[in-house]
Length: 398
Image 1 (cartoon, rainbow, N blue to C red):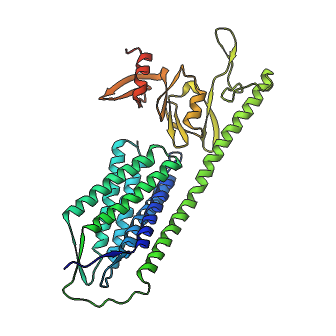
Image 2: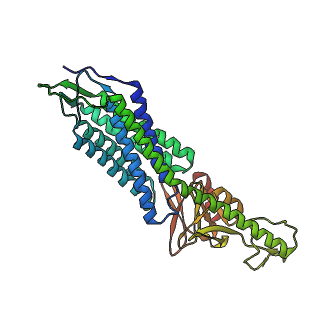
């Protein structure tokens, strides 16, 4: 005969909070990693995997402690530990796939699938750790439902969090992922049946009751997440300082230009007279080539706009490709767009700006369109539907 199951509302809410906190910590730790070298990136991904993996496991364990059964049960320590390690390992592989290589829709789906399967695998491995006084059985429908919720919700959460790496999108993705983890757990539990064992084994009384043990687990998870988030603070400060340095550099260039031309300070920050020879237009007026700041080896440098192939959004910052490598720019893509000449540059997508003079090809794939930039190192850039007609007109393809 199935045993009656009840839940502690307080512990259910605690398990949900742990899942959301773990998801937020992982997504925050793994934001803006492209400006880090491979070794530092691996460290941050590892920290994110530990935060999310332990958050998933803590949610599951707290959710199990929320279950009130009329009999006393215990858990096998080895299988309980194995379930935690499984969560960390699978989540780590998923995060690595997102941060090493080109992040495509396919990769996001693969990462979401791995994360969902990791959550489900951790849950059922953790459930198998119940080792006394009751028999646990599962409904095939419940297992399929748990897999479906885990994968679909994980893909949606990653898509949301990685679409625009802002604090708002990361927070929203964290809530979705935390809800996904919790929904998968409690939907699986709904289809789980506990029945009394044939023989009752004596179970020693735990030093801590379920609520106190759950409190220890929740607080430990929050402390771990907090420590990991503190580790990410220096990187955020570095980005902010880079942006401030870029602005200061532009101001110094403006002052220099005013001294040279006697303009009395009437100078646009995007223009640079300090390091380029003036170019004459049709009226013989002196003009200056626009330059965009980028950072390399902790030194802020300036890149002539004419050499820029592609500008790609990277959270609050951008990546500038000059035909050979991606350069970290502390400016946002909107700020760069205001500095570039629309006659030469076009924002083909919310995340991309391309140099129209360097476009070497155009491709359609169903209802999607792409332009090819560069010759030796060809790069394919997506074009939003609203910009296809404009680009085709520029390329004289109409």
